[in-house]
Length: 475
Image (cartoon, rainbow, N blue to C red; front, side, top):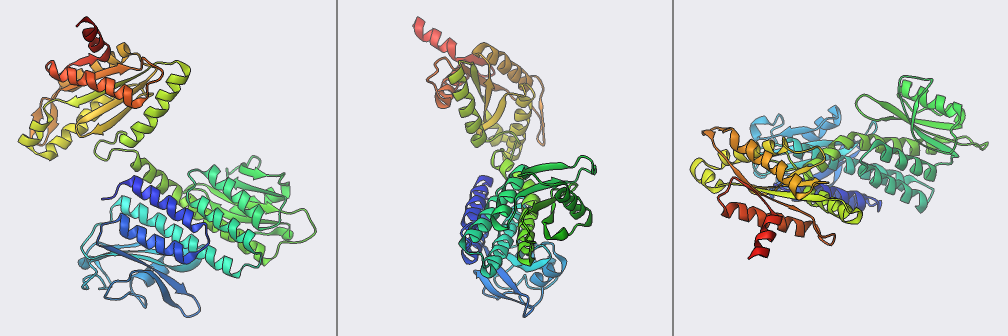
């Protein structure tokens, strides 16, 4: 199974490639990503819907040898219903496509721009497969990028404003798909709409259910009261409005509970035309995809920084947090300490009771360590049965006290596992940064040497790095 950070990197690369405005390249990259970051036997293709002929055509990617279900079946189902379809095995397939020589399971995602259906993202496997929540989140974001690429390319093809507008639209699509907050979304929208349609002011408005005090998330210029009223009316009507041709208001769903509107206005004598309204509508569609993906992208980012077994920080998050804390402590003369912990005789647990019980022990040790630290500390799984705790502002003596609490918490009560109650202990080494030239690696090496000493001296104990230095000095 690929790591979540791999998926995050590929999504960012796809969004960046999308900025070039080349629909074919973006779509081929999406189908490759689905193949690379799901199991190796997965294939993927994108079917483009031709409204004029009411049929699918121009597949991107590698179709299965058995052919694509373009006339009816999965793609047509998602076109009509607008929701993804997941088929885990031939027995679950209502259309009978799975079970063919090269297809045993598949997913099908609709690609749409507002109310306009653009096509479908079809991902298939030669073996039965349950698409878990992580897979579904990843595929949903991929489908959003594919829909954005198709919608952008369609508009660029018909646009008459030249390369500047095309670049602005493509850049906005890319940046919106990698936005991580509503403020990011609003900032991109404001910049993009002022680059693609005439305007002197723009804003992203949120419906607070209080007309006397609506919330303007992001704005440029000085929006007038009339523009504000257009935005509120747009939210209430849930449709694009252009009152008097002097402003355009596009509805933008901000989250499941909050509606919003993107508003742009002009102060010259010329009214907005149909093309301006269509451009604003496209940006609203991009924004809706972006806000829908915010939670998914946040979850993918969280998974990329979290150990899947224990739920604590993984090595990546530890490295980022630790580097930042050590650099700040070095520059400002503050204390920082690290504790390294290792489960004693863990190999014998795995050998005697199996890896399932071993995983249960690791999970419970992580929970007990986490319960003994401050909110400002970071507990991470360092690897295997080893843990690390970064303690900003702590000296070695303070870290040793915290480490003793961790040791006692693990040793004092048995662990409840499927093999019964087990007694478990941990050994810990602690170290404080004593030289401002140290980096995180040197600090951890110092704590690790103390941990090895705790193992040598009988385990189930805490050793400070300074005691090793004292012994060395005496000898």
